[in-house]
Length: 202
Image 1 (cartoon, rainbow, N blue to C red):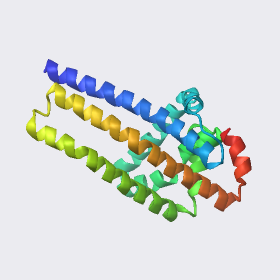
Image 2 (tube, helix red, strand yellow):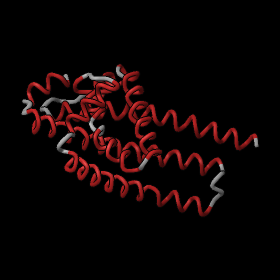
Image 3 (cartoon, rainbow, N blue to C red):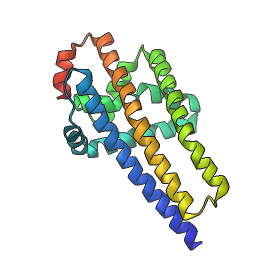
């Protein structure tokens, strides 16, 4: 009982830290890719500094987004999928425009409106590619699980390492997809000039 409680507490802490790291790295990558896409020279220190300075806003937006999607999933699966696509560019909105919380979700909803299916298609393709990468990294994890006790310390540590490495690879990829979708929506729907957009990104 005590060992199980310690294991659960450790896994919860690891997931919490992993979630924070995901938010910070996603925001940093979003900003770096935005700067590069707009013709600038991204600097990882500048991107990380910009991301950490907005950490409270990132946590609040993540809480609102995943909380809303969780409630929608409890009601029906389709509303959660629809909302997930409608809110998909909320984080780029926060990074590029500085809108926070419900305002970022509302802004994302307006941008995706009337372009839901193209955004959905791009996200599905990106998810399939991300899943393929995750599958490749999952193969050694499966081999380890077969050969060792899945509850052993070595198996738990290896699982966390594989998860972190996989996130390091897939997070920039998904961030790039979201940034490109965001820029495409703004240019298509608002005719927004990239030069003006670059001023907002910094």
